[in-house]
Length: 165
Image 1 (spheres, rainbow, N blue to C red):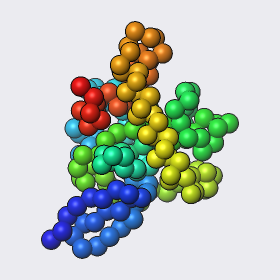
Image 2 (image 1 turned 90 degrees about the vertical axis):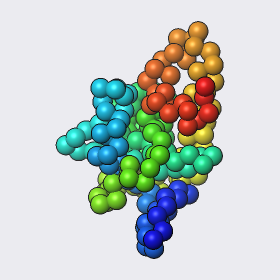
Image 3 (image 1 turned 180 degrees about the vertical axis):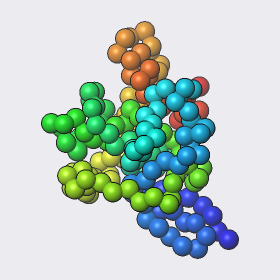
Image 4 (image 1 turned 60 degrees about the vertical axis):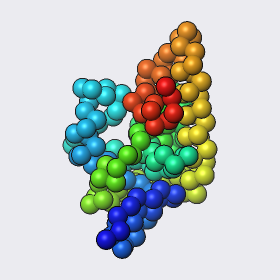
């Protein structure tokens, strides 16, 4: 039985069947490990989970939050007037395939779907830039702007995965 998780667009291979997944929900297992009390910057809604956009960068799989009420520049806007978009500051690393809920199919609002259509490469590039920005901020925490970027980013919980000591 073949069980592996491949992200390049995103393709999951479970057993012998393939399912292409671009938008996902994180699983209860993920949230039981990354609890809100220990990881306060991770957005969690128990009654209505957040949709995530998947991307692989340098062999690391990320799930990037789609959300509203974004008030910073680290975003790919899907609806700028209403502050909705792909929030790179709330990206998480997917270390295990069981962190993705394969039983629920996310459904985007048409406006968001249209805004993200054909933007896979742009999302990947913007995430790469955000990771670089985070690493640079981490190297100079004497600046308040860098302190805030690191403090409010979920990447702080995945520094080992990013090669940050």
